[in-house]
Length: 150
Image 1 (cartoon, rainbow, N blue to C red):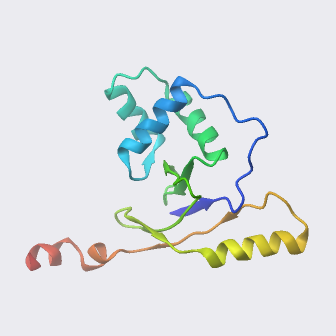
Image 2: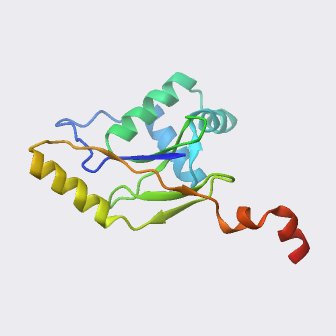
């Protein structure tokens, strides 16, 4: 799983207009809490009686990502997973390759490095990708060991 984050998320001079569908997608993301795929989000929206197409969900997530409203990670299969971005900016996550558990990690050094590289090279709107994956303690121990311990 790769983690996709913008060091300096480009902001449009005129924010995209809020739509009913985009609000429904964002509300559903908040309700789920954890990282979720567009397809799973679409199924949850339909189960809640929201009439929305899968393509519309993808489009809404794309806009929410470009405007800094969601964090995105990439599963080992390449599928993107989304979750609402906190108000104070994007996060970096350490993601379990076995179960998908994600933990926020402190990454101030990465942010400073990206800003310094941008300044030193004269580049603007620099984006970065940081991939932090591992195997969490529960998965490392394994289900059989957890069952016998409990």
